[in-house]
Image (tube, rainbow, N blue to C red):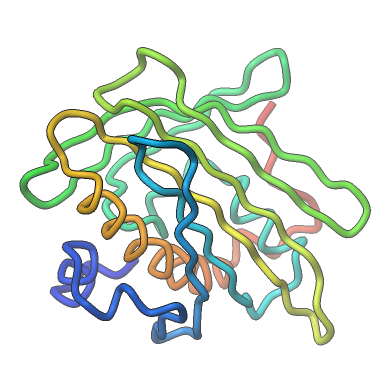
Length: 199
């Protein structure tokens, strides 16, 4: 996971973060900011290619216990399965000033339907010090054992953080999530033929 001055500058809103296509060391990511309603931060939609088959990418994404290994600023994550099939994962994020530490839990559900692998997560109300947090991954196969991945990310930290600053941070962090994931999928723990067991 990148933790260098370059990433910090991007997340704090370097002007390059406003490009439609962001170049990372592991490939380009198209980023679109989508309105979800008046007075709310925008949702970031990232589209990119991962040089691994979707089954392998899916194994990495559903390994909630190790999300901190590829998500920027995520310091801790765990995985607790529920009887309804969801997995609750508690997160501790450590952002630069003025955001600081953010703690919350998400409920995640994943599924495979035909040639689509999908993961959705949403904030567990009252579980932390953010207003809202949700997102999804959709994976589809490409020739040559590659994956087209679409990531949607919405975060509302609440408090007095200006909307423009939240939008700029989201737009910057989405490509670096792709960058981290592209490296993360190479770990040998994802060589298995089935997704990680969570029950």
